[in-house]
Image 1 (cartoon, one colour):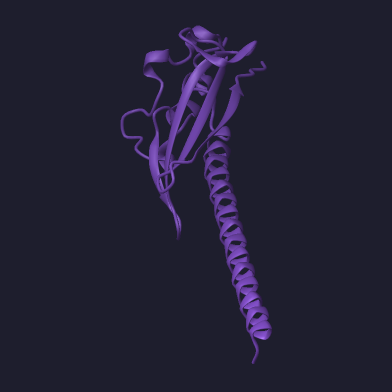
Image 2 (tube, one colour; image 1 turned 180 degrees about the vertical axis):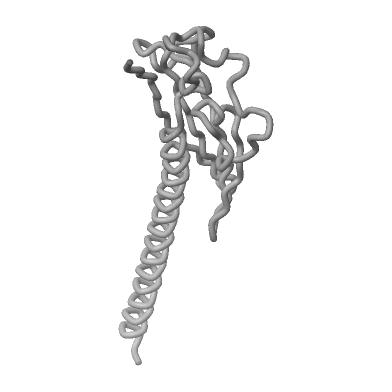
Length: 166
């Protein structure tokens, strides 16, 4: 084999090596993207499951009290008392929407661990992103899901309004 053929062969091996490295980098980047997408979808599913559960609950303990004829905001749970009542330790024992306030749990999947935390606040519907310290007939649940392995986080919110018809 002459010098020219050796150089061409060496050049072909170098080009093949560069191509192999580029393909490998492409697979790695795509794999990372798919994992991030998968973790994002899992986070959304976890948050949505909690919101679905909470949205089925009565607005407030007082909202289904038949002894209170006219339901007004001042009859509802005070801001300082939002959260689970005595004996309500998990979602299966919650009996109204604001029981989800300060609810925290850890969800584990095959590849990930998620820290889930919930906050319930009264809100003014004209300014739904701001919590208020007075009682109105609107509460907002914010569910935050944090991926403990890569510190990604996601927050979804749901507004629950109270409507009462005589």
